[in-house]
Image 1 (cartoon, rainbow, N blue to C red):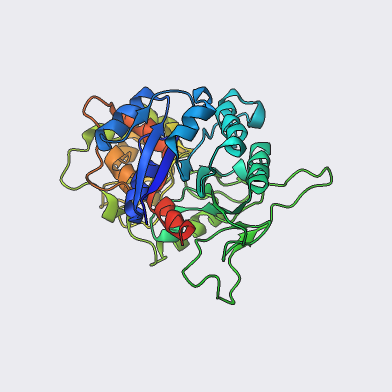
Image 2: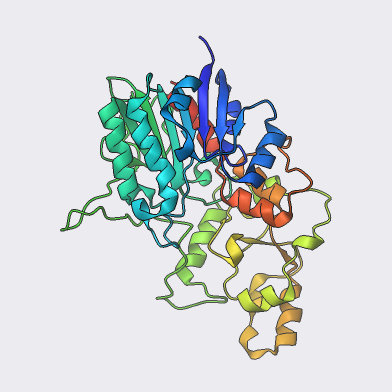
Length: 388
């Protein structure tokens, strides 16, 4: 079998490319496309032999697409038009223009790709852009399945729920396909023959015919409602119980397996200003925890790591509101809280040790690039499932 010719759109730092390598599928990325010059520097550093186009996707002509002669598309379009903390501009957001161009070009290709994989944020599944996407797939003869998946399902202590769609050009349904449903777990090898129904959600519609976004249990992007009695910090009894359950789930690895060893982490400690300002909002985890979040807390960095082993979080927060700022700072500083380093976040995302950031890329840029990236292990598994 000849290697697959893969077109990687919105390539970023190369998460899709890395997943393709991990899948061990015989494939060649014939072109990667992204306009982000900083992300492209990281991509070129790690995949120097791949043709990288630093141009807008809507600037690629039908002729250029045809000349690439690809039979697989991997893509992760901009998520800002669909994220719940954004304006949710959907098809009206200018950042959706490039994806709509892909949908315009796809039916006109001389040869349709045999496989498509798309990743985006939770919220994409209820967008009009998604409706246009699946309608285009159906018109072109693709069978597809949608997913909402988090790395926790693979035993990775990181809650980061994301939308995925895999599509295959064939006349028969996929063996694990559940029409009109979004799968919440990755199909196993015997899914097609299993009598057990996979976990799914039905998007449903309201009286106006609009899709209703489902409320998923343990959705990491949602903070506690605040309707119940607070314990220490801004945390409800329900939220604390959920975290305790996550930390006792032995199917998930401990965070310490993803941390850097013997490194100077002083630059990642929370500055005094952040400690005082965000003390009641911090999601604090320890190396032995089996959970973490990425996003929706301090400047999008997610959970912070407690590195002091000789103090309990409850003791640090006891009667905190009765203390002066100086006393608060002294108390909180004892926890030795720090951000996860870029390398540690890359580890949680599934990037291997040999994946590197060029020296000229700043720490802040690394955080931003990783925030826009994806989980390599999940995509790798979906690629293998898609190709059977």
